[in-house]
Amino acid sequence: MKKKYINADFAYDGSDCHPTQEENIKKRAKLICIVGNSGVGKNEVARIINKKFGLESVVSYTTRPMREDEVDGADYHFVKESPKDKSTLLEYCKFGDYEYWSDLNDLKSDAYTFIVEEEGLRYLRNHKFTDVRLFVINIERPIKMIINSGVSVERILRDQDRDELRDEEYDIRIYNKYNTLDELEREIRFAWIANFLMKTIYISIPVTNSIDLDADEGNKTLPIKNRIKDIRKTLMEKYPDSRTISPLELVPLDPYLRYSDYLMQDIKTIMDDVDLVYFCKGWELSRGCNMEHKTCEIYNIPIEIE
Image (cartoon, rainbow, N blue to C red; front, side, top):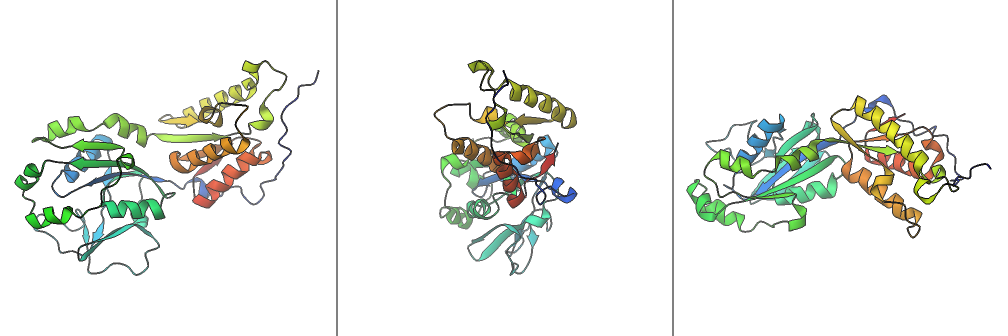
């Protein structure tokens, strides 16, 4: 008896959506954002993370005067005015009488640490959410230790007006009650950061027309599972320091779920969590894969075609 498969009844030749070589090499920069009041240890945490993972920090721009202990081009780029065209700004905020911003065009590497104000982080999330991926660290410190670190009363009072983010907007919260860098370093959850920095590849593969309706319940998805296993092996050989995810792992097959439920989760994962989308042979014949491809095309998410 001939095996029956779910038929997507859809075909598209993909003539106008195959990626160019330039599209293939685009990257989504990862930013380890460090947020907190003056004197809590943001620079110290950034230096510890940079040393641990071989990263650099984003150097922002500001119109405020340079302080005695600061270095132009290292702590900030100190300039007289902000750019009129803000379309390429990674983040922008105004604090007191001075402006702060960073430029998306300055991101040349895969990942950075990024000391940023809460307002700037909100700007980043609202305007550049598909250009970068974020891991947010919040640092707090006892007020007595902040005063003892030399922070002026004016800056401490100014920080009282900062709008804190919600708890769920932070990936890590650090309470810096320590007097040494070694103690502070032990508080940082490096495993979480390493997990964030690992390259994540999404396998876009036709699913609905690859399910064997004649097979036993536990074997209906066996053909596609074997196909994904082979693809995963190939990808791990090419990208050894990476992890792969596929549609089958995101939402288990459930007769009560709609097609849109699966597709929405797949698209959300592509937009939020992946560095590269790998399109398997036959993707042009799948509605879901075509929608995933269009998502990558619209939001400049790197792709690779089998």
